[in-house]
Structure formats: C-alpha cells, structure tokens
Length: 402
Image 1: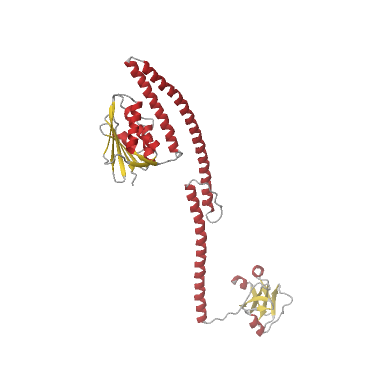
Image 2: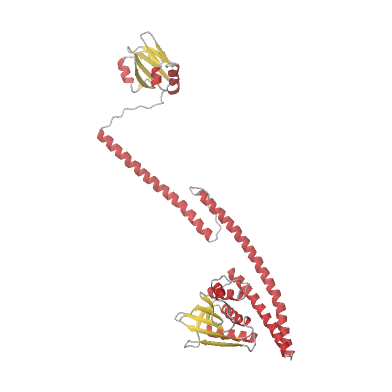
C-alpha cells in the first residue's frame, strides 16, 4: 500500500500515477480516481462513466466508509488530495455496527458458550459414530475368533481395519476348508487301513488258537501264544489310532449313563485275562467303599477302553510277568482309581512328559497313554503317571451323587 501511495504524485497542474500503482489497482480493485483538495477530479483510472467527476465535501463524507452509487469504496488521504478506490458492485458488504461495551461483553460470552456447546455436541456425535464403527470391528474380531466367515462393509473411519479383518477371515476359511478336506482324506485312509489290518489279524489269531489246541510241544505252544498276543496288540493299536483321530476331530458324541465302576473294572480284568491267559500275570482288585457299588456318570465304552489300555500296557511292557493292582478310593464327590504294577516302570522324565502331554507317540507308552488321557479329560477327570517301583497311574473322576 505504501508503494501504491508513493506512486501517485499531485501538483497544482497535474497528477501522475506510476505503472506499479496501476498494477496494484488491477490486482485489487476495479477503478480509481484522485481528487484534489478543492474536490475536483485530478486523475481517473477505469472510472465507470455513470459516476460523477466532481464531488462536494458532504458527499465525500457520506461516501468515505460506504458506497459511491453501487460501488463499495475505500478512501485514502494522500499529500495534495484524496484517493478513491472502487470495487465491483455487490462484491463487498458494508454495515455500521454500534454496540455498547456491556452488550459486547455479553455477546462475547455467549459466542464462547455456544462455541463450547457446539464442540461438545459435535464430539458426542462423533463418538457415537466411532463407537458404532468400533462395535462392528469388535464383533467381527469375535466372529473370526469363533472361526465364522464374515464380510464387513469396508467404509467409515475404520475401513482399513475392516478390510484387514475380512482378509484374515477369508484366509482362515480357506485354511479351514483345506484342513477339513485333509482330515476327510485321513479318516478315509485310516478306515481303509484299519479294515485291511483287522481281517488278516483275525485270521492269524484264529489259526494260532487252532494250532495251539493241536500242538503238544510246549515250546511251540508258547510261540503260538506270542503270535496271538502280538496280534491282539496290533489290534489295540489300530483301535487306539482310530479313536484318537475321532477325539482330535471332535467327532465322538459322548453318550453318558450311570455306570457301576466296580462292575466295569471286574469286566475289564476278566476280558484281559481271557485274552492274555498267561500264568505270569496276576490281578488284584480292591476298593475302600462301604458299598458294593460306586457310581460315575460316563460313556461305558470309552471308560472300558481306558482301563483296558492301562491293563494291557502293564502286560505288554512286562513280558517277564508282573502283579497288576487296581484300587478305588471313594471321596465325597469324586473317586480315585490307582493302577500299579511291579514291573519295569518308566523314568521320571518320561512320566513328566506324559503328564505334560509332550510325549512322543512313537515311543514306548505312546498311543495308549494318549488315549487314556483324552478319555479321562473328556469325562472331566485327571490322569497322573508315576514311577513307583513300577508303573503307577492315578485317575480321578467325578462321582455320581444321589
């Protein structure tokens, strides 16, 4: 502005305006006129034709802060005259505002109050919108954790997170389908292998029994008995393999009923003795209950499988023979079944691995221990393997009350 004013020179005979001042007018205003002190026009630049060229002092006072005709104007006092700068009609709105100090203070307070109020309302509305978005995201995460396929609408403040959740859900669903397909193939393969193994094993066991009945030589009879026992062992391993697969894939529907655990234990001992009719194995069964019957709630087939595995485990790993003891102690709301033998047992390190579920199923005490632990866990019980002058297994099960 100072450069603009400096570019205007007024004397008694003429008025000159520099190029920079004209450029300033072109950039910021529409027209300009310079009036001498006697109110006569000394210079004009782009002045509209309808405007007067000379003005009285009263008119200039009226125009000083308002309009010349419809043109908003600004006036500058310069040495030797007055500069009037004009803008286009309807380009600037001017009004005279006169407010008392007290009213001005009240207006300022109200403005601050309404600004704060509007800020709070906007923040509340934004928080509602954000919480709605966040609830959608949290719900999506929970659905993904439950392995449910989801497709969140990818818009809003959290659209990037929603897109990521959709991507994870899609990938998990694809992996789930692959696992399902793989498990189906594995089950089909296991079913075929199990069937193919059982048929020749049944023939081997039958022929071994027939030859044993016909054979008079004691040494040969013992060899046939070994063949029969090893065939039974393979049969139990195949059955355990199928059962573990069912339990791992949660395909086994647990149908429970009230079971007399003492009766079940006697039946299991009798079955094992009939299969392994060897003189070097003895069985001792005892319980400390005042009653002849102790009841639990469970699946009889699975519990028999667990007991059979423990009894056969003692026989298989003690070929020289041993004494197998079973004791049942009755508590208020539970029972403790202790299986022990005086055989070779196992190391404390191996017992710890079995209890922690870290045993290698390919090593000794592999499949059988896995099956026992899974079955007891399915019945809300616990299993503990120990080395106590031989093998010792403590099983705790809830007792059927009433």
